[in-house]
Image (cartoon, rainbow, N blue to C red; front, side, top):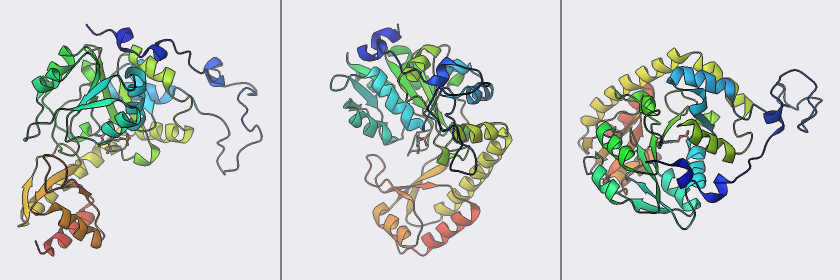
Length: 349
Ligand SMILES: Cc1ncc(COP(=O)(O)O)c(C=O)c1O
């Protein structure tokens, strides 16, 4: 059985969190002389002199409505990267504990583990990019605190099998982080409705992809309210700016626009795939459930540099294990994709 108290780091279990002025008084009326703000105003045209809501409640209520969960099951971070870093700091003892990732996958898991001095175990995906759930569970030892899975996975683009993920979540006593940054582009359903069933599950979403708000730096973690409470204890008090909260709230009131953007991207992805297929040096285009395509080519490195010379920037994944020769190409607008294809057609492969 999963026991949150058991896997928490000792210093976090006993941590008395910082209480900010706005944690103690919740009202909006009165004369605020409690937080050493500038009472006279701001140097900007729009007033930004007051600290924002440290727990972003308005945002969370809206998020809970959209995602179909409780507002106490939501954590908002300065990008998903903040949530990943906090999870390491809450659960993994530096120099002692380890986590498991399944490469090829999103690079920040490894970087964040290295920053936090957490040992990393790698269990490669199978060459068709599916999850080897038995190998993952076999790699678990007494110091394994977390398993991070990414579905749809970056850079491979595919969703992992629901059954395989569930096997891992059910049989592991630590935290399973399921990064669903690209889930809005996938035909598969999110794991969010299963949160109440799996108390060791943390699901990550982001405003950076389907919502088109990467500039705001808003990442989301969904989990049991006990896990969210721990993340809130450890996060910097005002981690999300008032401006970001305001813009996200406006965006969420217009969810249809997000759906339209997703539809456009999926249509363009299909067209882009058809054009890429015709190129003689493209040997494989992997099926994608995300807003990018992983494309295997005869000489990825050379193609990458050729494209840069022509001012088209893609992601070179040609040195990544199981992705040899591959470029990861984000789906652009119709005209951006046309330019990409035009340049590729002139490439002497
Ligand atoms: C799988 C995955 N998770 C998370 C992120 C980062 O999200 P955020 O912008 O919220 O930090 C990315 C960005 O590329 C990603 O590919």
